[in-house]
Figure 1 (cartoon, rainbow, N blue to C red):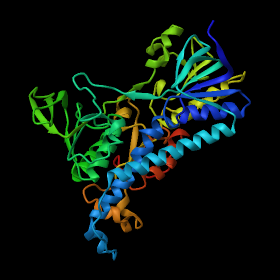
Figure 2: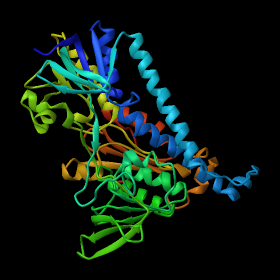
Figure 3: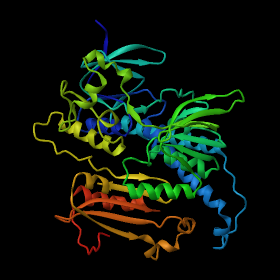
Figure 4: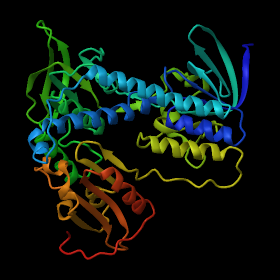
Length: 460
């Protein structure tokens, strides 16, 4: 029999926002808890190559772009010298910041008596997990309950081999220590668009190749169209209804990407220095050996009791975050973590937090924010609705902002969709410098089913 080195009430596999929340909640309720994570720094994709690096670089790159607008700034009395951007210094500072944030997780887990293993985990059976650490023999831990919070990985594209040199994933793109002259992105979702904004701000010639006829498929069409126009005005090029067939380095050492127009069926060659693949993410389960508990990936992801956040076949195994259905957001992972821990030893009904309408923000400049239903969804569902729309240019404070002076292509606006039958707020969509802050109120209105009291004429 294999040696079991420790027995826990709860083992958490993965220490991103969801895994960290689960471990902390469990320990604070008196459960003997351990966590295993294979990354050099705790925090998962969110910290290491997701939201933290992307938002950091977005802020830095936007500041750099603003400093290039010398005429606009100096007419307000601020005299500038020439600004330069050092990508290596930015990446060094970012790496340090990620390590510090990971250390915060580490200290909090230690203070709450959570054992942390640095290594990989794989199921031996439904209660035993084999842990492999560098320089240490593999060993087994046993747990009464197991939370799986391993996150997600990028989806690769046939014919396009990610080599982390000229063809990169979104994870790798955020750690590049140079600014490519020509940067092409395969995929027009929020991840691709945010990284497009970073490199566009820093001076790359950015092209986005999207197989669909519009960007951001989960965005309201009017908002998506305005977003595309806004980004085009900033210099980003879009090739819609276009698919990447394959990519390779030619004899001259440059990257040649074969594109096919889905409408005309014609192909052409597109040259760039870096191609980023950003066509989506998938649950990261391949190294967990879930076949040892008689499940495949589909069984694991789809057959979950959302009331207790548990596998139907194994109620003591609780998947959370990106390894479950729905949006891959830190907020969802944290809510599911709380629900999973509450369900342990609880005989009463667990109140289920709804992740059906999570708030979404595209951190370009100005920001794009939305929550709830889109017009297209309401029309498809045959829900009668009214639309209220207002422009921020009518607000005096808005007109004092320097960033507003930079954006002359799109008028920032907010659109509210209301159920005509009961006046409930069904969706809010906006373009504004502070959409992230404003969206919290909109999200509350949608999730609580608040009603609007307004005067709307002619459907506007």
